[in-house]
Image (cartoon, rainbow over all chains, first blue to last red; front, side):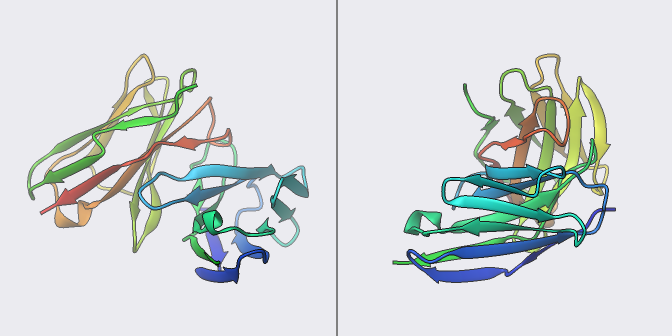
Length: 111
Length: 113
């Protein structure tokens, strides 16, 4: 079955710097890759996603890139702000198989 | 449009008891998935319901069960609770498929003593 590995597990950046979180997946059939942000006491919030027919997608300060050949995808956050501090999860899925999540990255933005 | 709602938000139960958690999906969403989140294991898939039928099942014991009603609302039940069942239980809804955008509820925090 699908396996998703996420790195790093913790990340600290200065406010205004960029943050990058990387995930690799094992199943080449995976075609949908969402990213979630989870704040303390809340459920995961979908922040951006990408499908296998696209190499990059951007939404304001957040971007996701996908390398199908290498089977990895990355989340990029530019101009980080204290409110970006949270746990971020990547996931991969194909068709109607269940979403498989990475273990999460705890991002701390230091003001 | 209202988001995914889950009730109750917090629950404390004793070992051996059983518990029922409820999830109301986003209006128009027909797929509901349940996840268990713990610090050690992360987000683990329990099961998915679509049109009142279980479509996918994760690797959890039979003590974990669920159902879906005709209005797409879903419940999950855990019988004979164990200490290790303490976790945040999350449900997520999507239009039809697992590779549609999935939106999570706030979760139910279950503590087993």
